[in-house]
Length: 124
Image 1: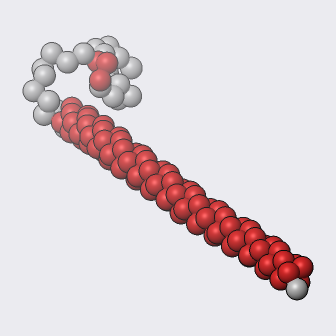
Image 2: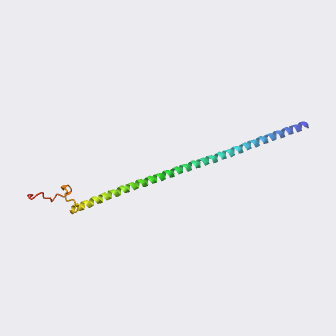
Image 3: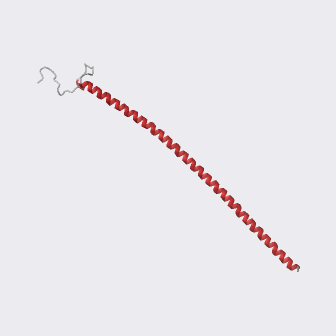
């Protein structure tokens, strides 16, 4: 019977060893899964941070572009205003010269309409 008990004991020992190996394998798989989940979470966190930084960069670029556009628009409007003012002054001067109200009695013929101008008494 000792042989039977010895065989039963050996079988039982082998069963415990198999159970322990299976338990270790399962524990190892659980650890790897946990580590993988941690790495996945870390990857997602890094990706989210990178996306956040890109969005912040894009917002800063948009802000700078808007400011530059505003500055450029202001300069264009100022230039247009100066041009309108210059045209208005030129038009006023032309009307005053045409009506003889320029106040410049020594004006040369360069600004006058000479189509009806008679240069002297003997002009025919």
